[in-house]
Figure 1 (cartoon, rainbow, N blue to C red):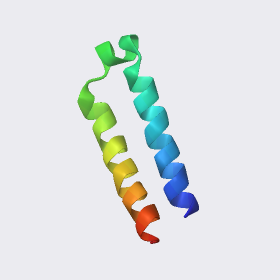
Figure 2: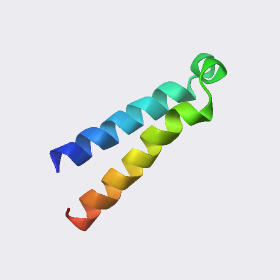
Figure 3: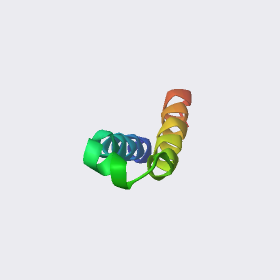
Length: 50
């Protein structure tokens, strides 16, 4: 459960950082994609109780 919360937090932080225009100019969508995917998986595991 704690690992899911930490993963969701890290994915949220990566997404928040990526939303900033200077960061988006340097880093493409591929940089934040894996973090978002891990965040979604963690959210599903947390909801399912795993």
